[in-house]
Amino acid sequence: MKHINVKIISVLLSTAILVGCGGGDKEDEFKFYTLKEAGAQQLELTVEASGTVEAISSIEIKSKASGQVLFLGAEVGDYVEEGVVLARIDQRTPTNTLAQANADLEVAKVRLSNAQNQFDRSKRLHEEGNISDKSFEDAQEAFSSARAQLVRAEVFLENARIALDDTSVRSPIAGTVISRLAEVGQVITSPTSAVGGGTLLMEMADLNKVRVRALIDEIDIGKISIGQEVTLKVSAYRDKRFTGVVSKIEPMSKIDQNVTTFPVLIDIENKDNLLLIGMNTDVEIEILNEEVDLALPAGSLRTRKDVVSVAGLLGIKQSDLESFLSKKVPGENFDTFIVLKKTSKGALPLWVKVGKTDLNHVEVKGGITEKEIVYVLPSEGLIKYQQRFSERVKGRFG
Image (cartoon, rainbow, N blue to C red; front, side, top):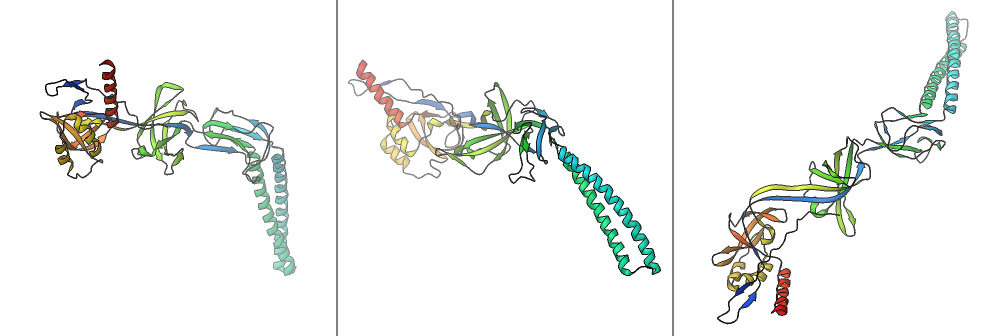
């Protein structure tokens, strides 16, 4: 997993300055700082992550008919137009059923014709008083039954035609076959006849537009937004960069080895079908690219705690520092920090209000002006290490 891309800031160490002590021997004192001028700065920050290419939507291809597979018309990776026959199932039973349905329909038509004639005669005789009410009602019932039988025969015939047509499995979309799970000769079941939902023949997807699922660290997820442009690279095309757009930030986190991440979905146009399902990608999301009028190196910012450790190195009097730190300042360690300004009288601690940062530089919103110079120092631990190192050097080489 990758996090925010931070360019390594080299810490420039000043050369040893020989400071006179009284009129006697001179003592070597190493001061580790650089001087930087406040001014305009281009801030750039990128979130990096890894992801996997997947289909935005995929379709399972199943047969509505049960039976033996006689033909499969596509292999994995084949592009298929909508309506193309992907598979054919044994048609013998549906064909026989259709023939039976046609015969039953003809019989139903003859029966209805006979029942119609019988009903017409009975009606005329009943009006003339030549047959009983019971005989007329029987003829009427026979006629209604014959009409119902004709309707059932027509429905049965239509169902038989559908069943025969279902033995040809056609592509519901124009897309690429991404998996094939059946083989010619295999006996399959339909979704309606099988408890498990029927046999899966193939799986298809439209790869003209794909999606990358990237896992973004929880520290960075708040900097990502829907519609944000994303740059992607894959190992197969190292010299090519793909562009996508953040389409969704899933609300459910994933935890792996105590690291919490959130899935971010990135949609990518893939007209050339270069991106294939399952490819691993390197994702870069630019979250900051802005020039600010006033900025300082991030290494110039100090807190109450660590300003004490460097004050002595820069010649700041303990009493002056205590007086400076005696006042509470709103936003400390949040958007307000201490910088050490270079003056003609030496280092002067100041409170500055900061804004955006790319982790190398930070925008300054108040407390210092353009062209003023500040001290940039490494961490307290590094300073102590460098001091010990310089002492060892002096001890070895005199």
